[in-house]
Image 1: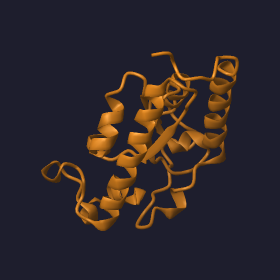
Image 2: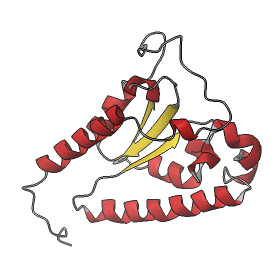
Image 3: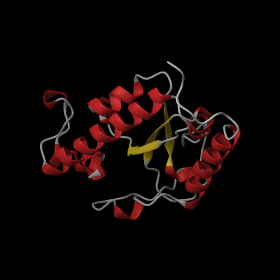
Image 4: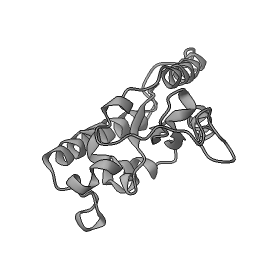
Length: 169
């Protein structure tokens, strides 16, 4: 269902202000339902104060940050939205992407990987175009997976000696 938020698919899904950025297709409705459930669970876990980490990835499209569930996440002080380019992780296409997380160092590291003239990747000025089907650029590049894994492991290991119990009322 994530393809309902890509720029290439907007002529079909029509996530626009007029429909609250919810889209008009069954695929859009499915993703909205998943996001609502996921954000509700994340909100519950973050409010308990227990050891919990998360990431949510979505392609950067014009209005993806206006989808109500993602907008709600962005408004939390303990959630960070990173914007980066997949080409920084060894793939030949640029694919601008968002990740929401509660690990600030991960968001900071990703925010440093936006491909531009001032911050070029290895493919700068020769990125491959993704036309039609975006399936080839859907899998996370191994370098991105390693970065996320390293930051999650670091975050979790720093907290391993904290008491694991519900906060006192």
